[in-house]
Length: 293
Image (cartoon, rainbow, N blue to C red):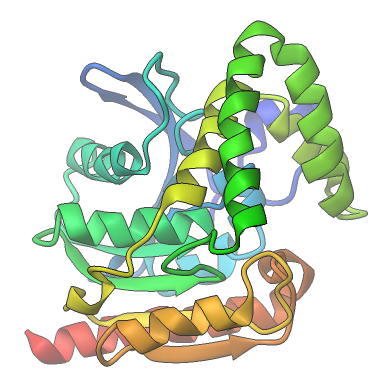
């Protein structure tokens, strides 16, 4: 069983969560992380969350089950929740580097990157930029690109303009995005807690993150990914169409595919199906990696 620590979430009822600790990263400062030690010799997974979420919102339904099999690192991406704050523009590449900075602070050498939606782009870049540290990938509800049609590109481009607006009127941007992105997908049980988490966002960086996701493409290099990879396809996903998720399977050599009937929030809304599938997908990567050693 993982130790439960509701800490700063005490103001709003929170789901069971592992304890937090703080690491210090040079030039970036302190970062609150969750680091759970799994069974002896268990592989370490790093959980990378989606856009406008936090690590806890994205993975609260999975922490307990995952900790029975794997060691876990999770933290909020730049601008999201308690993630790093910086005056620099948001770059997915910097988020991938942050994973290694945190792993170094924890003296963890080898990782399996587990990415959900935007987290899947960071996981792909983690392998691209630090292949010597990545032992496998699990890519969930994600794709090699997120904008294709003209209206999609214009929508993502507009987020950059909203990011500028957020610099001038952050309260207005925060209120609007809370209405659009969190109230519509809050659960009956954990809604107030999730909204409290969202209130911590730096909305300028979050908006820039949306623009970065819209510009992302691994079409030219995903076929070079040479570590064991599992892909979880959310079959009824209106946010990342199934065809784009399957494209990753087509691109990445020898990838395993797993399917879950659900929409983009399946890890929460269909946790009873998604979490066991996630465990199988990670185990597939771990076993194939061990066989290759």
